[in-house]
Length: 118
Length: 112
Image 1: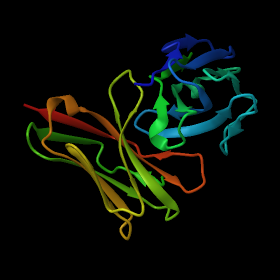
Image 2: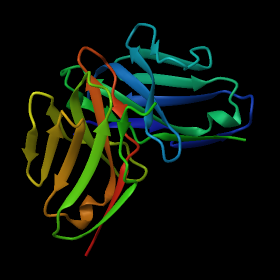
Image 3: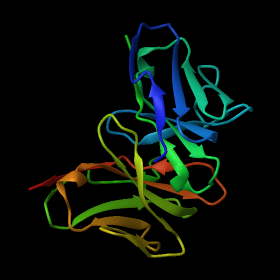
Image 4: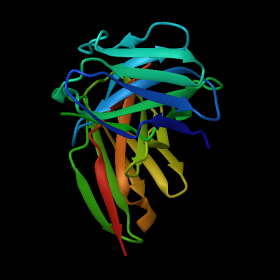
């Protein structure tokens, strides 16, 4: 089946630093990738939708200057949390949609990245 | 404003019996619903879906029921197996949107 990887799987950083999270589709091409955030005991909340070669579309309330998204190729999207603060500590999950299909069941999720900001 | 709600954070079921996971939604514009299964340290994996034009969809041991008037859907797993133990999320999308709205998840534990 389709595989989406994320790197790193967990990261601890100091407040004020920036952290980059990578999301890769390993065996398919993804024109669209999604970034979610999940706080403990809460649902996955969509942060932004990124399309290869164009600017990401951010959900209301998500600061685009703080959460920089780059989708430079059909297999890689990156999320950079700039000037991280403790309240940014969360579980970040990406998903990638196989460009061969448009249905929701062709959207595959990565394993997530746990970010802890001290 | 939680548009998709899973009011039971956990459920424990004996092996062989039926597991019923419930999900309620508030947005009448939702027209497609999905269930995902998530193991620890892994991403959610698609399980089964249903369009609003149907009230039931079945795939092996998994059946999803949709009651549009009540804005309620449920996932039935029968017979339940220990390998079904995981967190189950329901999600919904509205027509012509590129967005999934997730519930908070229900942790299912199937014991022998």
